[in-house]
Length: 70
Figure 1 (cartoon, rainbow, N blue to C red):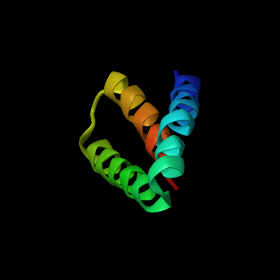
Figure 2: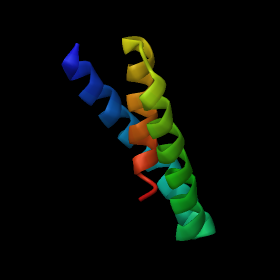
Figure 3: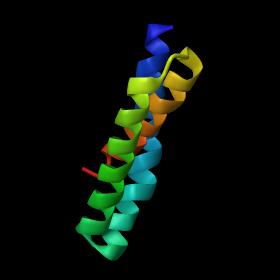
């Protein structure tokens, strides 16, 4: 159960590396950074109110996705 959190986070990083970093290549670093920062901020706030493991897996994935903007 605990290992799945790390796996979801790394899967998000892999998918984010393909998408958000590509946005940074096309439109510049600032839009990619701002998208990643917005995703990370929103997901972190959602983590505060989460009570379900299943939703936490999705949030870990999205957090990994957003962290690639940095």
